[in-house]
Picture 1 (cartoon, rainbow, N blue to C red):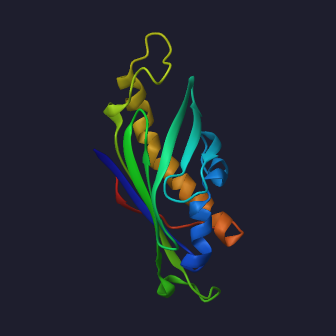
Picture 2: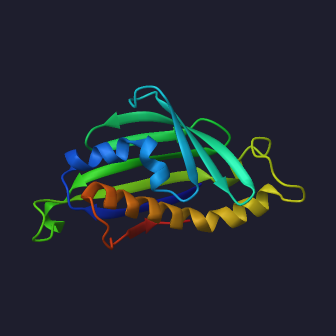
Length: 173
């Protein structure tokens, strides 16, 4: 299993941050290759989000199920089709990280644990002469960069303005 764990600070309280983390339907604004999100449920545990990705000549819909929601601290998810993957968004109060211009701050953690070779090759329509190994080799290095982009854009949404954020990579494949 591979793992990505990164974090950054948002200049807002966990109560202000968590609704943004929880709003999967806004994620296409944060991710370069996520085109749309369909929701089945009310956003609580058991809800399923169909995440429609496109990259290069490939299109894929991942079905992400919310496993547990504990506002304003944590949202756990796992994919329910084709790839063995799970993860968590975690928000921790970190008032000491707030600059003089902000009242408080929170650290946002994004974690994804996945087995790239668990992908069901029948679920992805690959072009002729393209193997799943080739796709994994090309996509794997982009996952960390995509996660960084998502977190950076999420902070801009939370704070209402773009700024350079310091991303801490705690673990990467």
